[in-house]
Length: 261
Image (cartoon, rainbow, N blue to C red; front, top):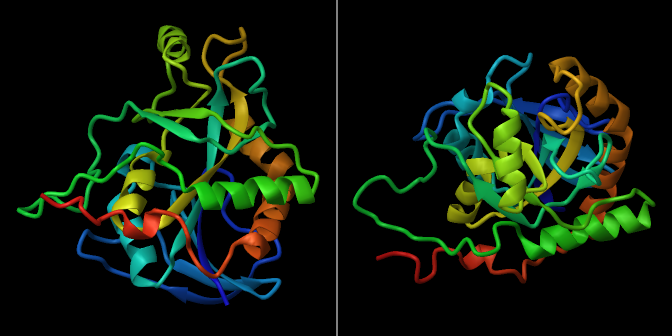
């Protein structure tokens, strides 16, 4: 039976239908993860769920211990991680309620611990394609099979937060090719690659980004939109779990091969 890791973001604090059988508190060489890992099963598939911001929601994006979170999944034997992220839509087609399966990342974070290799062991991972192709394909197939509309690609620009962006920043992000903006996919994606884990993102557009409309941005609309699409997200995940192969044919499992100096 597969063991798949799921990271829940703002407004995604559980997976409907997931029967929790165990809570496991862990300590890693990089400190404590955001919360206990929830072991459960859904339709015969073993899942390990972690709320990124803790439970209740109390850890802002710039203070999340990303290294501990990913290391914990690896220690638990997880090989694949799906991250659920609330994002702002930068382009008109990225309207609230849209679910995007991004294929690229622009990292604008500045003050996060973003590698497991801070000592004498120097590692340079290939990050040309930041998401696992196999895992993305499973998500896209699941969307088609379950008739859940998905944006098949997109570039996620990640910022530190916790403040929201200025209008000028969003104009700049759009000019460099970003489609959605969020605060959490990095360094989750790069740490997963260093850990030789497959990683993919389910980005839920909860609102238009700053300046796209004249509407004031609020956290309330983020939570409300996540609640509205929670059924689609859980349905997508459930279908995806059944489409993931036991064997990994992607390059993620060999990410450290020829990466060390």
